[in-house]
Length: 262
Image (cartoon, rainbow, N blue to C red; front, side, top):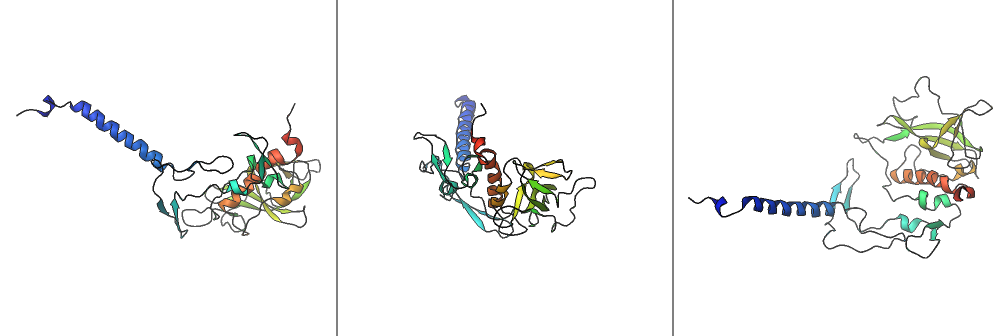
């Protein structure tokens, strides 16, 4: 009986099979990675067109807790490219954008850019809302020995008081403070806004009453922080807009922040 290995190079065939498998794996992974964010767009939202080889067929995902279905790719463009109020400062590809609205921190430009995330709250494995104010979060309290933020003042970068903290919003899954709920004392009328905890720093001024200092924005600008649709919930989209507002403040809160240091 003639052995197959006498006239077939099994090692070489195995190598060719591996090459074909590996090429197929690369193509598959590249196609799957293009379910979101493709086709690519330039700064003005103009798409570069679809790819006949790399664009995958739409796949439907069933979301938990009755949140419906989503199919990707869905052919939708980046919503922020149509929402931002900006113009290029020069006519060449890659030129930066300058905000054109009345409040540059709401124009969706640069550090104030936000994306069109789901307008639903983050939820835990059991379907409960993840980030909620402490007044509705059962079993949560400020640790003994720590300063309770409720009732303290919030001041901006110009030392102007923006309001007082009325509650603390906690992440029930991670067990950390995410936002400070502030009742504003600036602007045309009082508002309830959320201030991200990572933008706050507790200080003790000369009057000895502790304050939460927010370097990102001025005191008057607390009146324009994007709000939430519900009193005890914040959605992914609302979180993105709130964080973008404070992020933009680091550049646009005052005209001087857009200038060079030297």
